Amino acid sequence: MPLGDDGLPDAELSEGREIYSSRCARCHGSSGGGGTGPKLADGAVVAAYPDIADQLEIISDGKNGMPSFAGSLSESQIEAVARYSREVLG
Ligand code: HEC
Image (tube, rainbow, N blue to C red):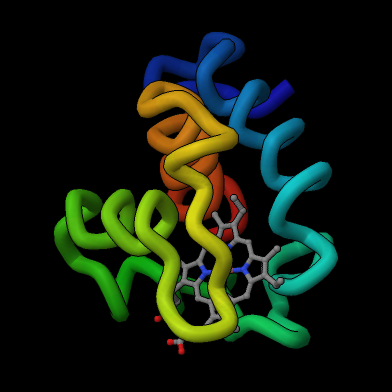
């Protein structure tokens, strides 16, 4: 289980990991290396979206080949997967 800043297991990050592997990995790669969608790992997503709010918006609303997840994920699920991509893949 991914650990939070305090070194304890972080439930939101593990939820994010599950969402990522079921909803995002097929386009962005299982470790975020990219594929149909751009690379998210190695700091790429944090560099593209220094403010997490802008990343949350693209996941909710979609953009070109990036599907919108507003109808299928709750706000807290979107936040969990965004944190996972920044803190674990990133
Ligand atoms: C059907 C393939 C597909 C799926 C599934 C998908 N994405 Fe994407 N994603 C894309 C594509 C293509 C883009 C590039 C959109 C553009 O800028 O034109 C993108 C862009 C992004 C970006 C912006 C990256 C950047 O550098 O601008 C983020 C963040 C992102 N996706 C996160 C996610 C997350 C989180 C999930 C799962 C909840 C997900 N994506 C699922 C295809 C996908």
